[in-house]
Length: 179
Figure (tube, helix red, strand yellow):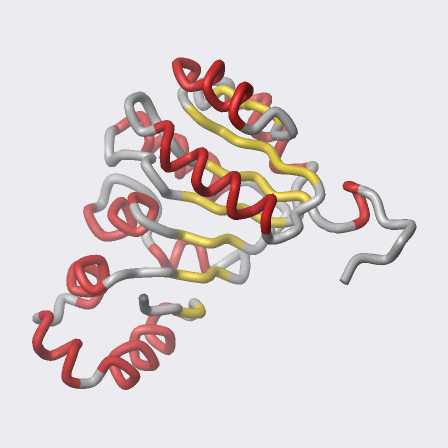
């Protein structure tokens, strides 16, 4: 429950990195979930082609173009946490964006989801250990992502979901929420 005198700067600031070209829905769903969850200030890093739909659908969010690294660094400095991955794609451009974000100072907590996880396993972006060296990290894999992350077969994972999750959390130093 919020205090009666709270305001957007007193209840948290989130930077969502999501929704490259053709994937604006992922950015919108992430943004709407953050706002429903009570975030006070929301910034969305996304492809410039998504600007109009994001600003029309989520007008309370601040749009930051994914190509403007200087603006992204400013947005990171004004945020309390990062959510990275939904609809991001696994392109070289997305990999470079993630590398830049991983190298940003500040040690902000990070949620890695979807393509953020995929790039951490395909070598196109920072590996999970790169993220966990500087900050608290929450990984949110589904079965297919956990299969790629752990290298285990789906049947092995399903037969011991809790054990696999604990082992993977211990191995990576991240908190793991296995969907």
